[in-house]
Amino acid sequence: MSRPIVATIDTSALRHNLAVARQAAPRSHVWSVVKANAYGHGIARVWQSLSETDGFALLNLEEAILLRESGWNKPILLLEGFFHADELPILDRYRLTTSVHSNWQIQALAKAKLSAPLDIYLKMNSGMNRLGFQPALVQQVWHKLKTLPNVGEITLMAHFAEAESNEGVTAPMARINQAAEGLNCPRSLANSAATLWHSHTHYDWVRPGIILYGASPSGDWQDVASSGLRPAMTLNGEIIGVQSLRRGDGVGYGARYRASDEQRIGIVACGYADGYPRHAPTGTPVWVDGVRTQIVGAVSMDMITVDLTPCQQAGIGTQVELWGNNIKIDEVAKAAGTVGYELMCALAPRVPVNVV
Ligand SMILES: *Cc1c(COP(=O)(O)O)cnc(C)c1O
Image (tube, rainbow, N blue to C red; front, side):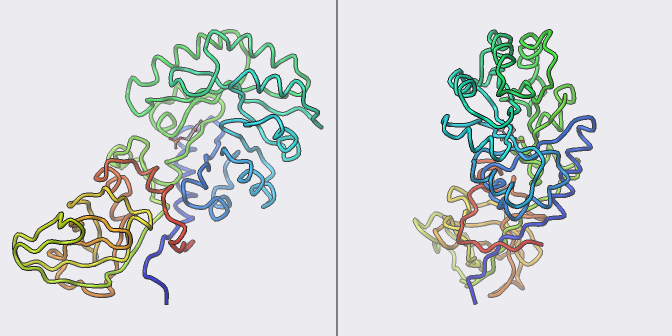
């Protein structure tokens, strides 16, 4: 038998979370964001559970081709566009919608020999200062794109840096409205946070990612606790050893934890090489034998150590949930100083995945 660790992907949770996103933006089309191998869930495993979506948004041509070859015929959006001009024949062949954020891409589109026009997402920099044209250039770029026979429908796209805060979309929305004045084109602006919390940003297409997987865009589960989202990924391990400590005994590398009294601890078959965050400190919540307890001591490559004080019946073979329905991935992420996004994406290839 194999090492007792498994990630479970709940397809009904994915379906449900997509419905939650749709309810939040009932008049918009939905791009389901499946970049980074569907946030670590496995694009090949999950796309069919999200097939009620209007389109899939991602970054890699490989992922786009996988979707097309698996039978997805509806829109696919390349969020960062093409990276080199020689990719355009592939965009043409697989009918991919592409963002355009730089002048060289416009020149490449002008020169390319395509079988039919491609739909374009004109990416504007609304204040995040990563990709996109400055607001003052949007009209000029839009009119330029309009003259190109290779360009089909043009949608104005922007991305928010602070949509989880109340005022975080105010300044970007003002820039977008000003830049787009008089342009009669569809818009796509909203990520998960804006989909949930800023309905005036919704327009034609929303682009939720993290909420489809049942975690919070703010990093704090409390912020989405009432939204009905369900975690799509559960990471389970098992206790493979038990130690009885005396007062003063150290645990794990660096003896970063010492028992203040007699204490039973469980050794769980899950470590940072499985994707559990190495920075998770003593006190990070973990679910053992139906009870919330905490990890103690340093996370090692293949093991963590957990406090068995509140679960006296637990022993070798007892089930452990690292994250899932009982311990939200956001809680573990927060304890480790990161966000649920990173933990999902970091699930290691060596962890077997079960799809239910
Ligand atoms: C990743 C991404 C999204 C989705 O973000 P979430 O916070 O996961 O909802 C939307 N739009 C763009 C451009 C992205 O890169």
